[in-house]
Structure formats: structure tokens, C-alpha cells
Image (cartoon, rainbow, N blue to C red; front, side, top):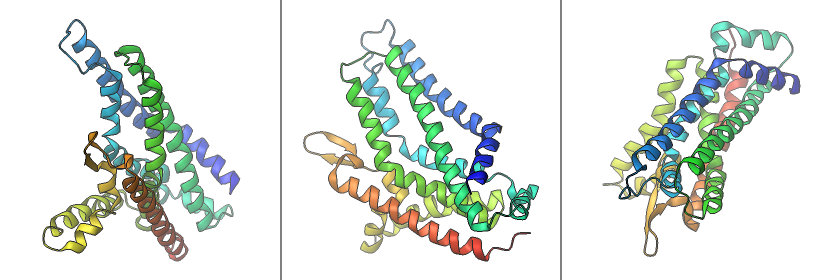
Length: 260
């Protein structure tokens, strides 16, 4: 499997997809900091050109990051069925399970690397362009903590995309299925919760809802759910359950999948 992982990492490294995703995400974050810098320059009444505000914008955008896991999963799987490259891997001696696990490992490695580069660019540009409030170290540590808490949820989204790619083999089918599971189901559950209490409880454990959920506290006002003990627990447990569910579905489905 190590040889397969190395070959996949080499393929991803020489593909355009990963650089496009990193370029778009990093470019948008850099553009936000530049906009805050130029608008706030020479405008004393503008209070938003600070690292604290910029970092808070990133903290509240976890839903977007979660959606990007679908893009990353589809990019990692690539056009394996269309180009018949998966047949070459099987002919070379790799089992379907090894290919599946290898894709997941590669997806996690590439995602962590891309995230570190994009966040590094964002943090550096924020500290260089915007007003420092004296607690940048704490703000950076908060970002690291946040992504540590949401790591199981983000891996769930990535794992689901890779699993669906293996089982469906069609980009459109994967995209719509992923959206139905992670966006459609939470929307339906939120609506049904107004009439049925069960769906209210279910909504509290759906990973898409947790990615963007906030709560009101008496001392801090509105904060992201991961900052509370109960919310942190829900984020981690929901993510781990999601990983387990899609991993089981994937392992069973891949073994039964007929590769053509």
C-alpha cells in the first residue's frame, strides 16, 4: 500500500486541481485582508481592519471549509473510472480495499498540507497588513484548536466524497449525493424539528449544522459552538460517528463493487 500512496501523492502533486483549490482559497483570504487594509487606511472610524476581526471571519466560515472537503475528495479520486486507471492499479496487484484506504490516507495528507499552507498565508498577511491587538498568539492558537476540534467532521466530509466516488463513479452523482446527505438532510431535519422534537435532537448532531453552529452566552455573547464544553463534545463525537459510518459503508461497498 505504501507504494500506492506514494504514487498517488506524486499524481496529486503534479495535478492542477490541488493548486487551483489552494490558489482560490488563499487568494480570497488574502483579498479580504487587503480590502480591510485599504479601506481602513486613513479611516480612523473604521474598526474592522484588525487581526481580531479577520480571524473571527475565518472562525465563522467553517461551513465553507466543510463543503470544500467534497471538492477535495472528488479531486483525490479523480477520473479513475473514466480513465480506467483504477483497473491498472488492480492489475498491478492492489486490492480494491487497499486502493480505497490509500485514497483516504492520501486525501487526509493532502488536505492537511493544503490547509496548513492556506492558513499560513492568511495568518501572515493578517499580521502584516492589519492592526495588531496584542493577542495574536492567542488568536492563532484558537484557530489551531478550532481545526483540531472540527478535524473529525472535516474528515467525515472528505471520507464521504471518496466513498461515494468509489461506489457511484460519476462526478455529478457524487456531487448531488453528497449535497443531499450533508445539506439536504439537515435542511429537512431543521424544518421537521418545528413539529417533531425528534428531528430537533437529530439536527443537533448533524455535522453540517455543527460546522456553522453558534450559541449565546451571558458573558461572551454569541460564540461558536466548539468553544463550549457541550458543543466541543458534540463536534468530536458526531465527526467520529460520521467517520465510522462512511468507513463501514465504504469497506463493504468497495468489496462488493464490480470494477469495469
